[in-house]
Length: 116
Image 1 (cartoon, rainbow, N blue to C red):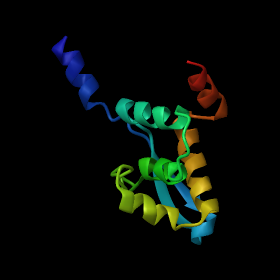
Image 2: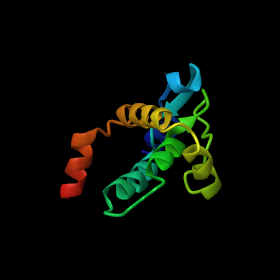
Image 3: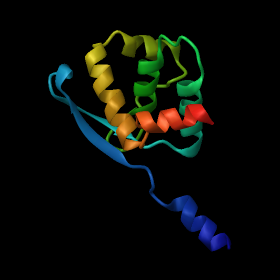
């Protein structure tokens, strides 16, 4: 049993996807899959009825990483969210959409969460 647990613990299950953001002059950036805890936190933020002026930046901060999967931003840092919010909304939309697709969090998925 512990051997199986050790195998699961050491599996490389984080996917990193390269995307090219046209609004950022074709710069390559990376987004990654969420772990279980990150997904729960993001789902809660997406489904809570509130005015969240940082939601798009929060999604981008949660997903942007380097090519090794190391996070570039801290989604809980006001400074990081402000830095992202200063960027083009179109670029943030693109990054957020690619991140959400990679994590299989499309509109239907969010609607289903809101029902529960």
